[in-house]
Image (cartoon, rainbow, N blue to C red):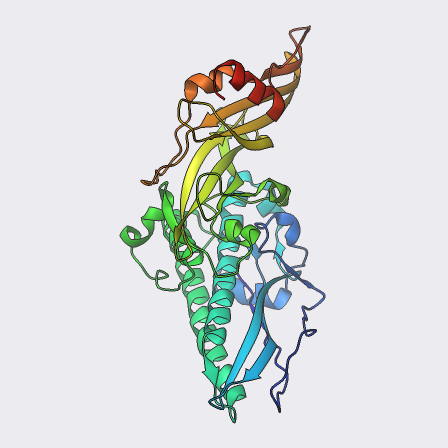
Length: 407
């Protein structure tokens, strides 16, 4: 469920000028396009009037999200032809009025389902904020009526935005578990639109959007978009980008002339331990975005990391020679803490991946043999005995590879 606030912050421009300090976001709003939503973002209380209206339709809001689209001028100039070229900054802010019912959060299965639904609402708003940014900044305006032209474009785009949000809520009801197939279709539609900066797929059949589920999908980067915002916006379907993954983003030209981007995501799932017990489980997914030109990237799966249903920590990513060719391979060091009756310490998972070629794969090839030879192992106490991992960092691993003959 969504409650939408649409705000346009425009200054009356009686002359062409530069405006650099008008960067207003309401105190209750925050920018979240650097990560995905978590339940702690929902700080509001249930709106009684809103809930009463839902009750009349025999519905109950399990949660609702409250995005706000802010538009404000950055600068403007008078062109030689007498028209005005204006530059804008458009932001999609998450408002603290968003709320959830505690029972929703406590129900593990429902919690995943509802949070996905609310993330989709936010992503629709974020996508239209990007579309609005691109549309407003891609043209010039009549010097005598630019305000009217800007406002007209603004309202036309937000009318389309409203229609998509309403259609989505009309077709998918997170209060009813019989809508899982419809939810999945909309998840793919929204993902396809968001990662390509378009609105053309919001009514598409599954056949037109199902490729978002496969490895090697192509995604579009907005010109000038920071790597962080790009990897969050173009994240794989049903993955989360927690804030702690931000320092793990790496831009590298090791294999490509234009920098590729390495990013890590968390994926949550519910594991059925028996008929009556469910367990929250997580895994870490590593991806590489490889540029193909014209701001198009191929989203390639590197690997999946998991230890007993828990996500791992990424300790290091680097390149080193690990086969017979002259191109360095990608090495990822992942760790997982363990503390139980059998062991207490840290597990080191060291893996090596072959370089990409001109024919970009959908998934990188793991060099299993060399990965096994430089695997870190366990470091700590296991079965009452102290054990030590062999290779725990870049220097130890590169030294080991050199001993294996890879220089």
